[in-house]
Amino acid sequence: MVIRDEARRFEEILRKLASATHVEGRKELEELDLTPPQLDVLARLYSYGETTQTALAQELYLAKSTVSGILDRLERRGLVRRDRKEKDRRTAIVTLTPRGEVVLRRIIERRAAFLHQFIDPLPTDEVWKLLEILEKIEKKVPEGAPTLL
Image (cartoon, rainbow, N blue to C red; front, top):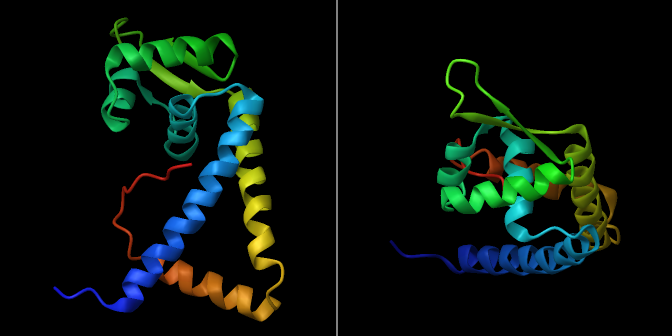
């Protein structure tokens, strides 16, 4: 398969925007005293809802003990909650708390404000056209692909 120049340029632009957004996002994480793995857990819960500790470890490619430590710290801060299943007390269901949702929304809003500087100078019709094209591309993304922050 020959990769066309347009696809290479598209990849380059996406990588540059993602990298700039990532760097900006790190500033917010420092202010909130969160680590990237903690953000990954919060983002997973925000995007897909409650899950088990084991599933989180599998989905984030982390050891169960690592996820347990992350959850301990997030739970102490009131950002997540772990509830034991009645039928199997060994299984914990992890849920994002309202406070955790507020923190995650703050991160998302800051990143949106950061990205706004790139589209703000564009005419409104171009911004809508860009969004329309990106949404068409988004529909081609395989279902179940993770939404990362």
